[in-house]
Length: 116
Image 1 (tube, rainbow, N blue to C red):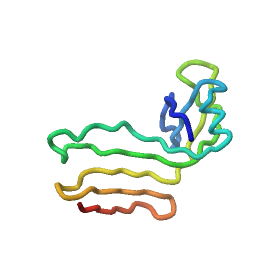
Image 2 (cartoon, rainbow, N blue to C red):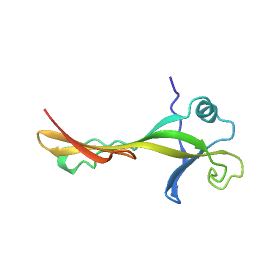
Image 3 (cartoon, rainbow, N blue to C red):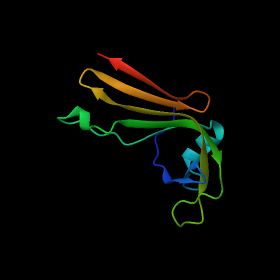
C-alpha cells in the first residue's frame, strides 16, 4: 500500500511530465523501490448540471529520476519525470452515460461509452 503524498513542481517540459518531492522523502524512497505510479487530477462534484462537469483525469506510468527537477526554488529535493503508459479522462457524455477516453503509446486514443 502506498502512502498518499503531495506532489510538488508538476510541469511539462520538453514534452515530459515532471515533478519533485522533498529530498529523501518517504515518497522518493517508495518510488525508488517501486516506480509505478498513478497521478490523479483534482476531482470536483458534478453539481446540479452533470454535463458541466469537466471530468476526472489520471496519468499512469513509471517514475524516472530526473535531477533537473527542483522543488520550487529549493536546491535540495528529488526530481522525477513520468514515463507515461496511460492517460484516462472520464466525463459525463449524456444523462444516461459516461465517456471514458484512454490514451496509450501503443493504441493511441480510444473512447468507450458506459451506459447505466
